Length: 369
Image (cartoon, rainbow, N blue to C red; front, side, top):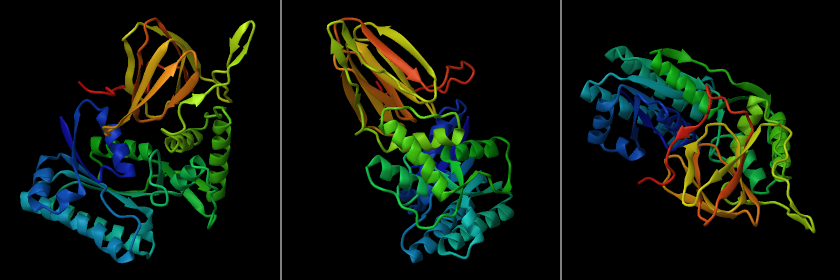
């Protein structure tokens, strides 16, 4: 078992990294919170248990004096714990391309990396310094983590985004970062790296998010064939949950019966139907990128969802007599239970045709026990 410690595990990159490591059967995740850095004995116990440490804890925005102090101080506390215990795990540091700039944030990240690099030279431990570009992803903090997070949040809440400076962004999704970090650890790569992202103007990024959001809010699944569009779309959708769901469907009824539109899409994908006996639950899994829709056609059911590493369960009672759709947000484990007395008929749709070699489906109970 490979024991990997993660600091800053509740932040954007930290949460995505934990989700990625969670599905690796030979990895144990050991988390260290900001409170552990203030208690040397707890930090000592943390570093002593780890084969590798992904150091993500830090401060991106805020009062300038605090930023300049916090990032080096956290790195120094980690170094002191490593030296007190004699532990020499592989340390992977989430730094930033801002180290090239003479800014408070850039200087603080640069100094933190220097402290960890100096420890590596003294102790002979592996050190990987990853200079990350503009990282975005589901559940990033708007007005803090990323312009993508800010624009997606604003569009999801009915606000009108505006551009201050139309610069080039080098976009890298947090799950791409998680894959890179895991690869660095698996292959014991050391030294400084500068992962490449997708270069795009702020204005072009906003145009793409606007188009994706406009389609979706009008009831159409947009074209998701471009990987960047899929990542932007899933980031946008993360700010709609849970308030935007369930989404009601217009039921057109006449003497012949009723009709409603289940999926309208520019993309394609795959639809399938299932029957479920009373009391039976389907699902209890999550996806990293798959867009998946649930629609009860007949019977009564409850759809339950829980964000990974969160205890709160969101429930949506649904019925075939009042058709609605619920689109599963990524990195939320979800299920559906037949709560009626008869057979449940459910339509499922996903934006991609199921590939058994790459199912993007990972087991995790919504409600444990």
